[in-house]
Length: 233
Image (cartoon, rainbow, N blue to C red; front, side, top):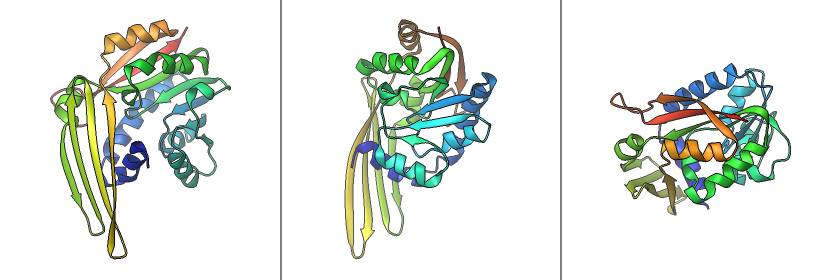
């Protein structure tokens, strides 16, 4: 199992529902202001944001590299459209693209330009790309640490460390099957992308950053996230 699939499996135990809902609401507000008729959600996971967008009268396609996540999305929302495909392989054009809940932070710096260029190609002229990123405060003060979840038939251990602008999150999952435990392990990486660097790279790829929204999911001391609203030129 890929590490991101493992993270998807344990996410329901992490009690992030309120934070995810708040981020989705904030992102949806930015989307609705642009009045798109169509939207592609990149890294859609299990399809929750697509479902919210569809309820606001916007036709969506959710794409994700994980076939497991796409299968779960299709089970949850059988009337919506999902594909296990990379953004570079999308031929159709959309009015708006979104990438929510850390998608951009999972992309290494060396791959960001290609990702932004591919996203640009999926948009109509003057289309919008709206996404969130973690701030340095979010990585240093919020994301690091150790978490243990011990339930009747499930044990989860998570250890996250931020070094050299990369967050390494080691995950261990034990699930009970009959009288035995099945063990799964994996590590995911998230990358801190300074806002100024992102803005310059987005401009190189045919976007202009129209707006940035400071946002906090976990702290009252500082902003741990930022939402960027970009327009295709």
